[in-house]
Amino acid sequence: MQKILTFLSKSECEFFVNFHEDCWRFLAKDFYGNKVIPFTPFPQDYRFRYVYTKICAHIQSIDPNLYPNNVEIVKWHEGKNQESHLDFDYHPYTSIIYLNDNYTGGQTFVDKEVVQPETGKIITFKGAEIPHGVNKIEKGTRYTIPIWYKDIRNEDR
Image 1 (spheres, helix red, strand yellow):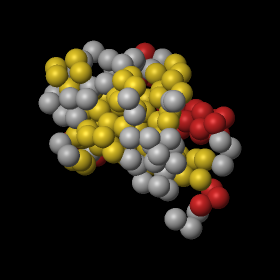
Image 2: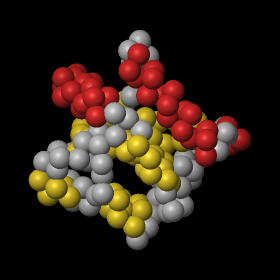
Image 3: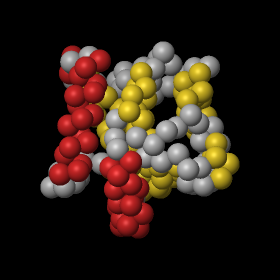
């Protein structure tokens, strides 16, 4: 079972959506048709530092040996989906922060449970153990911040 919490305010989510819209041409990489901006190269901006600190506190409340290894801001276009998969075994936990919910489709499925995205919510689950994916985005654009965590006890991987 995954953990779902309210994590960011609507205005914080809007900042990251607008950041992606303003900067994707310069910063984003294409990943299966989705536009991905790495989260960590912006330590000078207090909003990035604030959210990164919240992410660290969130995962350490689950397991104090975990830390964010990869954090991105992702724009999912209409028609996109992600098939069921497992994350790399060196990423024992995964989180997804939903930055918007004004689209149709695009629900996250974790095992047999379907999670309806809600702006500002975070979902956290054992991504290396539990099959998960994203249903097809029927209409609109989906923005998320996915996070993959590593365990300090497994630094050799």
